[in-house]
Length: 463
Image (cartoon, rainbow, N blue to C red; front, side, top):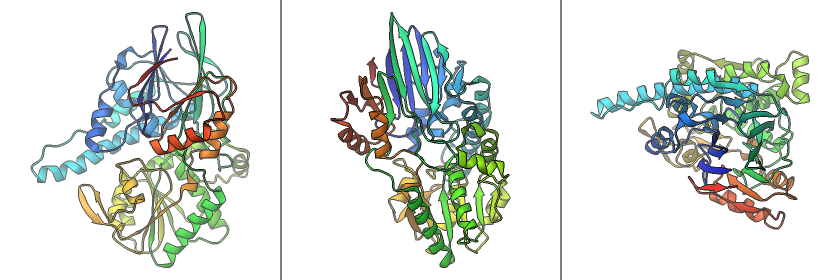
């Protein structure tokens, strides 16, 4: 079996790996690469293989850095079945449509400025119509049930505990009388987080391909992160400001709202909370349709008729543009959660440009931020940032809370690799920056006899 690392190799975004065996081609993930606009367009529009010759696509979960380039894949002729869990198929459908809409809206907004400057307009990366065509190719598969994805490729999904429907993927590839087993972690979740079950550790594999986003540090206790989250909000409220939170609409938003619900129920927080994302509202409805993904605590909420992400008095979902714009006219303290998680597109950009120059306000960063994104520049507390081509002076406080991440920290990543150390031939560290990969490799050395690789972009290896 040949594997080519086409994305999320020595970086975090744009997850994409091509597997070839028995004359079949299976694409593992088709994520959107995020970064500088010119590089983003170049890498996302140009595949290093022929999309028309794929036999299957395997998708670990619906986050855009794993699924977000599927519309380009289909537009360029891919007709192969896309295998994912039922919840992932449902979430990916609405997320990709939303992404296409955002691509069109952002291009329209930017082009108004470009035309005034005498510059040529840009084209959206893809459209909402492009994204809608992807849904026709989804073939949902349940957890823990092997299926044949392509000739010689037996695949099984296991709970990853990252977002609703997220899966680790085990492949058994039969070729020329021998079987090679590969376990792909996808994004590994954390233990004891709200709503979802804990991630399943790998088993029975020859090669482990695993994320290393937080390979350089363990996470703090989730309750400590909850306390830091609460204190940052209360500090902002006391000075009369707004809390602006860039957050992924799926997974992260629901977890944040759950945490805010706990504060509200305890009587410590009584300010309006706005989730400004039609996608987040639609995603929460999908959450309710897939209780098979819930942990026992959340199932108890459902039995009592109190879904943690929907039912408390200060929570408001914003769906139309007029309501979103009206938030910027309100002067009282509030919490605004809006997509995207790396502050690269969508309504969050408008909230940031309207609030970033007010020192009473707080920008709350609650997850890893890719290089060259606005989210990373904010996390690094740059004094000047560009939003929609204009420069703004950052006077708002910036608070980063790593403990809220839905990614496994270093401790769990080590446990993940050690679960299969006896018969493991190789470990491929992907979906992580060099510092994180090096720190995790140092931790793993001596704990496993397997060779550890940190493959470069576009490298191909024979397994």
